Image (cartoon, rainbow, N blue to C red):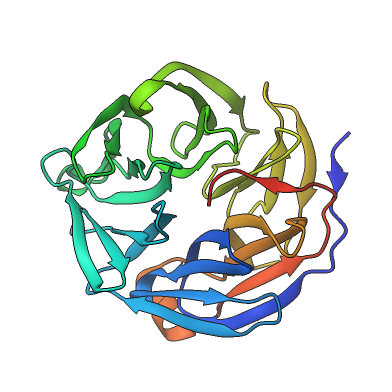
Length: 288
């Protein structure tokens, strides 16, 4: 039986163009306003702060061991690093990518794993399986794993031993073992999602469940093997693109929501938001 997460869904902060890629750190939710080219943070009380602005659409976020923030620049296909001296290029991934980069997870040593969209718009938007990129702490890029079917939400377990990634076009969530030097092995299917549920942003709870945003179908919690245990349903017309367990004890589910992700309409509507459901019964884990 699938348990409906009761809500209510609260508005934490609104008026954004398109919110994505939430990370919980130091009592704040960090997230991007993708089509507005900004990175923000927000407290549980709704106090929003501008972290930085890019000249490109930002996506995945992650933190280096010294607290510097890594930011994906999607179309430039670079990683930027925000530190005490401001923004700088941490890594140029253009030699290993081709169709735009997306989300990212950063391990405790500062090693970044970056996924790609893999849609070739020179061929009518044909999906091309694309490698998962790894960027070593010194900024050296390489291929960590081949052939993801539109890599999207990505998370590293709290013990640093497992990497979990959503493959949107594959309608599945995959997992890898993380070995010495960040090498990935033992690729496997963590969960096949129900028909029509295409995973976008994901987060991990301490019981081993993955919370997967599925856009118009809300958020589902899935266990290793594919059993769906819980579901969050949003109001009609409201989509959810990413989620993160945060709050004082990491039991509140934060949601990146909007009516659309289409660039033109989203820019006009500015109805994207950070929403929240308090205490969903599970505690968040995984590296921020």
